[in-house]
Image (cartoon, rainbow, N blue to C red; front, top):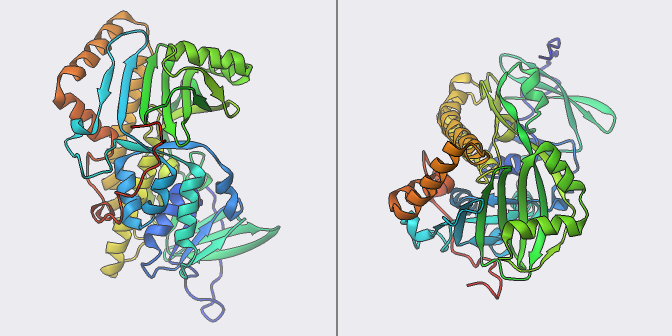
Length: 434
């Protein structure tokens, strides 16, 4: 934990606080939080070590839950996002060569008509960031401090004092609350002495974008293999992002493999179902881990997104948890503001922590169990999981419960998701898709 001397504060030289709230990290979660609070009247600073437009260069895609769509709709940005992403209308679950394929549809969720005929969405990073930046463009209460790096934090009774390095110069700002949205390796979390529980998986993930000869038909696929899950996320223009999970050495091999060899492996896994495949991007490797912070809050400090927790990418839940964190925190802070409470008071921040920490544990546990059960050749587990898939095919209640969890509709829902702006805008379905 970084300990620095208290910074002299002269009321004549500066106001008691430069900002009511400072968000360290302007990724999707940090931008979402700023967007949620932009009309609250709070003075907000956004800090990032990268220039503001950096996120527009990233093409990585994410699975987005129905709850994420509703939160973005409540923010009024969904009508801009939806035409540029894919709404998937079916989820297919399968296990290696087993013929027991589970097909999940909106009818299984029992909410047909409430969302645009789908079970979720797939959106690229740059699309989401552009919509959030556009929403923040005219916000007079938002101050951008980028590129800037937080180098020290001094937590005082009435403020957090941040030392920033900007273009080779150091400056200090005083904020009523510091929000750490600076990723899984959060320096701010570590400086505060907040410990984490979890582990690195024995697997890594390989991502790439392909274009199949056959239409992807807006189907999201999760195919479990003994080496790890293999996900296919449908994108506009009949593209797909694949996420191949495998033990580290195997994942490294597929990252370095020539395109022809890599596509041959994908063909083997698809069994020709999507026809000939074209590789549109390089293979990218990233490790995966499970992590849960032992606390989400300290006086004057709160953690959101990957700074607070990380999960296995199976099921595509990671970013969605962070967006729900942002919605919950914004709701807690706005309620506290209306009641005249100090936003940095631990009692206020613990309301957010009680809301989100248990729900996040449920998803972390679910994704971990799913990966461990399906990434195994141990025959009792193989028999059990295939029996479970067959049961899911036959029992509507199992499909309903699984979808409630996967779509983010299980648990306490933030108020912003109950007042959607435009959930029914036109989604980007390819002309060949139903």
